[in-house]
Image 1 (cartoon, one colour):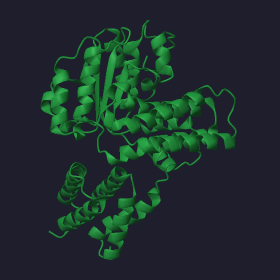
Image 2: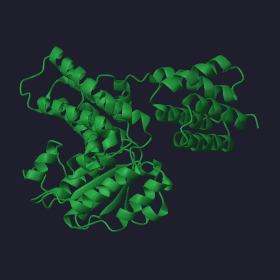
Image 3: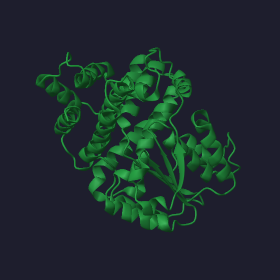
Image 4: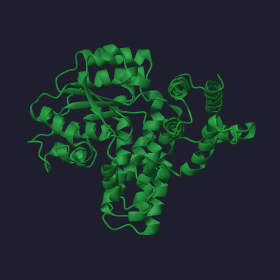
Length: 396
């Protein structure tokens, strides 16, 4: 039980396993922690254990566990706002390179997690085209699963190209939405748990990024969290629980997921046979596979922050526009802002920026990044205004 989680979060795995074995697992749980801290892994493994028909053993061969092993379970729904593109790009690159059972299984798993966001219970007519695309992706995966012979280089790349083409409408849709959670989705879930019983299996709903939803969604969700039916489990995943309604927080059992130790991350990365020693975290692995040029941003962010305290370092209007253009074209804005925050923190540690200034600058980055997402402000305007605010802190 929870074997994957035991590798990255052993203490949490023990706690969750104890509650599941003791039939004490809460029907409404909140897994909170930074990105890449194994929250989704934990949620899916908990769902598998809760659905097991036998004794929740490591190598259980019951019908339910077999569906989880192939990620074809129908008693789990995932609603998520995660960046699937980076994960899928990494899985495709790994498969094209390794072409072994591990990389094949990893690719199937990553894509099927996306497809669980297109569970039949969430179908609404206005999303007909997207669900059709999801079914086509699923058909392609079935073909992939039953392909028993070893893939050659050309065959693997041909399959990957075909899969990427089929995935494009789903991934493009993810880029448009700050969150996939809607009032319609919550109502569909309410109908599903109220009318459906999946052969005596638990019904598990995993919702990621609830803090990014609007008040209507949160209020609708609150109603079904108050009295979940028998065998119905809600697992909420959040990177910022402070933004979740107190009424929702009062109805969930919280579990905090700390950042995964570097040595444990490297243990996971060893499975992907990565040769680049600079890729020492899971996040960097995903970003590099996606084609993110971290070094280019490091140069300009270093120059930007250095210009705040070193008069010999300039940051001209042309360089600002260049940074705005780079930020606008990137789909890794959160990571770029993290790089900016880390550089400001380092400047404080080195004594270049005062504690007061660094605290205020960090506050602006956090607050403005939330506003730009919530109010759909253009990325160019956001980053330009943020720079001028940071500069204003220093010039006070």
